[in-house]
Image (tube, chains in turn brown, blue):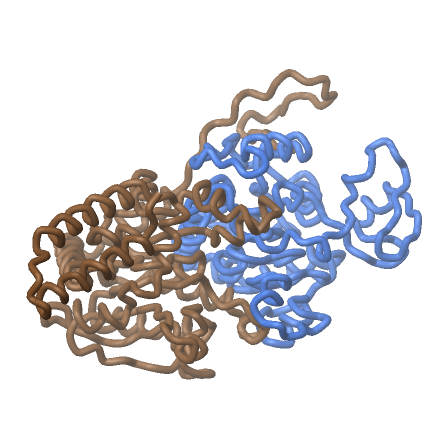
Length: 337
Length: 280
């Protein structure tokens, strides 16, 4: 099966031919057109049959637009607010004010780095306690002034480290969740790349959860699941499929509200197109949310999260020789003693 | 997120011993101890004081006034929404856990009283897939809190969990959102929530409901943290302190309010709850 790299190579070759065509005056336009058609065909075939693991790699592709790219194009005038007021500033989770179609919104955005240097500063997009504390601050700001809250999610997960544990990273996630659950303004969260576990959810408990077409959202990385459940790090592919972390699966499972389409080959193949689609979708969802009175919107949010989970009545216990008598008190189901 | 199923954290569990053997060996001090004495002693080694896991039922019995427990755990089981299979189908793991524990999932909830103070109590059971939180646990935690609100009782949750249950994928992850959302009802109703953290309170459970108590009490011997020791060591090559993520570590860093010995937990809860009786 042709992979992304081969297609990119072919694309580069077509570019060279085009240059030959222009500079040397050799007429290759027919050949170029034929190759382009072939490329398009191969790409369609490749992306129509992406495995879950390939999707994971695509979601993590550093060529994809990151939060800061969207902040420049989907929003206007991002005005960053830094610092958690306690220990520092987190460069993996950015907060601030921006305008969306002219109106102020509050932004929570996870940001990965593209270079080694930048990743050192941004901890590969893994927020630390100072990031979640800062998020909580921003959520409270949105609440106070009635600004809608937009989250851009792109993280492998919360940062696992000694200092993070010393500063109680788990509790900072819990408190960010609590703030998201209670904020009275409309909230829209978009997974733009990697939605890694609690670190992603901390800013993702929203009225509306969207995912870009090739984004992933999961309780654990496929590598982590492979090592814990399969006891074999090389089973990440199997884990990726089993975890059902792709946008289309999660939409089918009813866990997200919508998918923002990406151009063929991924968001990075045509960033402008992705940005336009994302902006349109956020605006549409926001308008929908704002059409409802606040109390109704909050009641809907409550009902949505209250209802999450899949369970069914236990099948009647098979007859056993257990000496225990059945529960005498019918009001206290003694399914588990 | 249940990253804590690593051997160095696992301690001996009473139920692992063949049920007909009268004696067990404490893995901490190596002493052969009479099993019934261990049970009567709250699963604390009578010789060295090492704590063994309490099952959910044992935990409930150790905390509530005798005879006051009314089980509110609904007979529901997870739907296995992903049809999850690793080296073994999730449905098989569930069946094994159910047979081993006589539970349908990793939590029991119910009404009861502690020194006469009415509470709704939830207790997790680590034997059941590491006490992990999936759809069923999330639902029970919420129902427990809703009962507390409806009947104006305090809520006490005793955590013993490795975190979110991987096999239910994002359904498990979102139980964090679900429990946190419902927790707000207790707060609006002015009802106290005491979160008791035991060995272990970690991952998605620590990063949601367990950290949101009005009062956080750690049982001596608890493990409290988000990411597991092994995961951290894989990420950073830094040495971790000996007492990393112990109750002392948590107390020193201001992460919890109090550390309490298992034998004193019941009295401690009554004492703490007593302050809120007037408020309710």
